[in-house]
Image 1 (tube, rainbow, N blue to C red):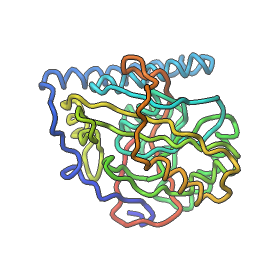
Image 2 (spheres, rainbow, N blue to C red):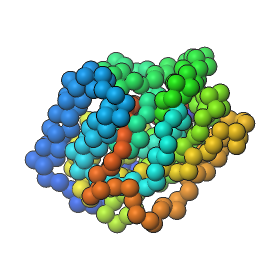
Image 3 (tube, rainbow, N blue to C red):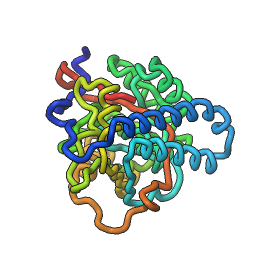
Length: 302
């Protein structure tokens, strides 16, 4: 295991419990079946969808991604506005594999994902079709090439989404933002848009069921989420950091981290219609780092 891989102290036993209401076993099975059907639909529909103009294509991706999150019984609440189109770097805290369709249900983007995902059955193919940018996160020497690829995508007008923590946290705490990914925004001279993700229970406190941390198997995470009830996914699009405000990636990463870590959630009306998000993106997970971390790193999916 590479010593450059980031780590978090969260574990399934300590962080991923669900104390609220639970769905019956048949109901949970139906949720999983609905999610599987949507994934299959996404794979089969990806080739023709790619041929659509940008506007309709993004609308289809948004609808599909929101439906996937909803299939697990999770309501979506959106705060903030995506603003004008154009290349930008989206940076978000990382809690779960659900983060990928959640971001995609709100703001179209290409995600940076670990290269292992390309070998995943079904999901790896879907990730590739979605325009995912892959990184070999065990090879620090591959990092400059990855930053260059991200820069080219941003210069082409794409939105690129990354999870700079490099590992999932439970949502009650967050990790440092690794700064290498921010170099692409500096090189392309595009804004950075911080995005805050949260999964909340019926009482408004952080929900543990969606957390995908430590050595948690994907199958266990899927079942835990399918059984949980009363969970709401909240995504907040924070004010963009304009190009030129910071000239050093360390300062830029720190500013984005401060914005995402702010615990004051908005109290105004959300940008949702009956809990259905009106905007998304195509993608999958990432890791980018520019400083070493402990050897016992955690992996995150997608």
